[in-house]
Amino acid sequence: MQIYRSVAAFRSARASLGRVAFVPTMGNLHEGHIALMRQAAERADTVVASIFVNRLQFGPNEDFDQYPRTLEADCDKLERAGVRHLLAPIEQEMYPNPQNYHVEPAAEQTKTLEGEFRAGHFRGVATVVMKLLNIVQPDIALFGKKDYQQLMILSNMVHQFAMPIEVLPGETVRADDGLALSSRNGYLTAEERREAPRLYRTLLNLREQLRNGCRSFDELERTAVAELTENGWRPDYVSVRRREDLQRPGSDDRSLVVLAAARLGKTRLIDNLEI
Image (cartoon, rainbow, N blue to C red; front, side, top):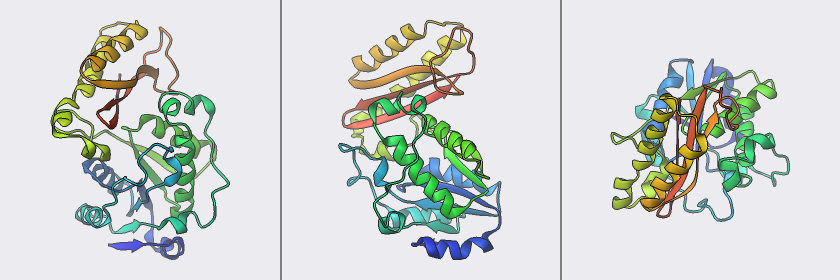
């Protein structure tokens, strides 16, 4: 596998790569990432992955310094998945100067759900993804549905800046017990890992009630939060939203998604289900 540690090195190779599908990551790869790589391979001549732990999207009390850096193991996984090109720049390459220019997503997309609890997070995500897209110049970019709000924001960014890139979503990959795969699952203790699938089961139950015609969104959300709280979780939100813009639905809206974020011990987990 060819590993590009500098922007210049990748740019010199780009012309020979043909039609490119790009999967940006922060490393510490799991099967969810690999599923995106396989999906990418079906749509392009070349799959390019990136690994870069982006300081800009971490808040002051978040885990930037502790975030797992597992480049050697990640490269092994990528090679087994057939990925032959990896952009893995050092921080000085991505940010040779203080990043004074930023992509600022629309407030209605960033001041709710994750944005309410992680101020500046999506500003940092959008800025680094814009930079990566400018470096890689892909034909296709893939992002997972597990980070549903992020997927919406990045899709809108590509569209509104008229970037010649097709954005493809990847389905959430789950463990056998339903827990959505995430790099942060590794922070869970053995006891917490046994409890963690409750988040998915809570969303399944809420989805079933919505499919059966219940439209009391506030009541459904309160019940879900109470169930998690009673079992030792500290929920940030469980919320029913419109898929198209993640705003609160009206009684006639049918294309919905339910999203949740909650802490179990020291680990913050997120999940969602489309309805």
